[in-house]
Length: 148
Image (cartoon, rainbow, N blue to C red; front, top):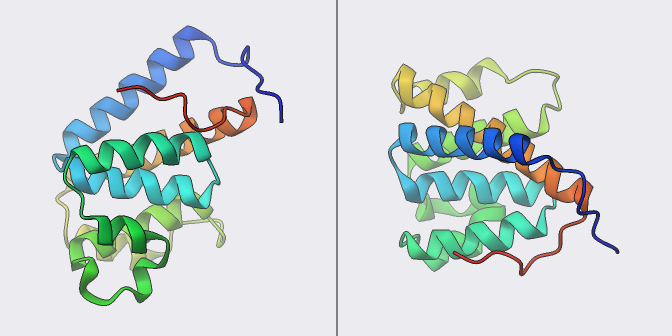
């Protein structure tokens, strides 16, 4: 697979970077933010973003057990707390949109764990990583190019 490197305008990259940084900062939990972006990247099959965000997650102290079981978080028992599980459920609902909308029960579950501002930032973060995933997958950017 040959990378397509000319599909991303620098202004678009800056805008996506700003959205990502603002959403992460507003969420206020760097470890949870990385779990969210890794899960969306798994669903979107974005190897570049997975490679990058797994490295960032480790720097933020996300336990290896959580990283190992993230793809099966619903079956992972107490590896993830209720807040993390609510965020991951919302991440999947926003990323996949199989029903054509985010189910009320998924949204309400997240709203029980996040105030309105943090919930807005969580949704913004999911939107941002989905944008990044689609940009990187459409450009065919392979893993290994991220340097902190």
